[in-house]
Amino acid sequence: MAWLLLILSVAGIAAEIVIIVGKRQKKSKRIMREGKLQRSEIVGLGGEMFYVEKVAFKDWHDSLHHFYLISDRLNDGHHIVEQKWSYEDFCDVTIRLDDCTYALNRQVEVIDLVRCFKPIPVEEFDRIARPLIM
Image 1 (tube, rainbow, N blue to C red):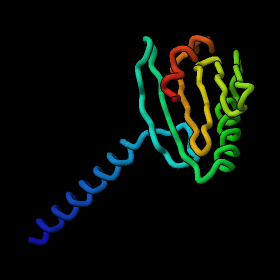
Image 2 (image 1 turned 30 degrees about the horizontal axis):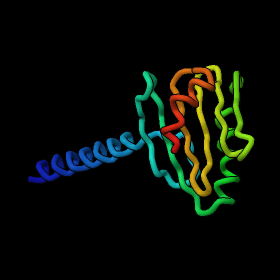
Image 3 (image 1 turned 90 degrees about the vertical axis):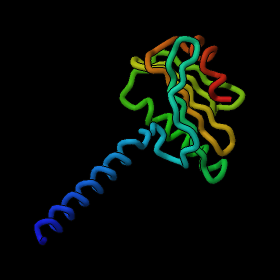
């Protein structure tokens, strides 16, 4: 009887470990670690695949501060091939790196990121991906 209890206990612990590991692996891998995740998905549009992520912050000042931190972190260690900043609001940028193209946009307390899995020209990226931000 003791052996049966021992086997059941070990099986129960193993099942709990499998469930915990499974839940942890199902969590989406965030690019923007800051803020509260609002949206994270992969979208196909215009023949391209895009990763879309949206995070929210407590106020506009916090989002502004993190916008520049996120932008610097995304560019860190990469060669910027092409970039386009909005001169109306400096919190809207599209950047093409060697391995991808992405747009980062801040709207008051929310920051949106749209990233293509391959590098495409900024103008083409904006034409295809801008609807994903709005």
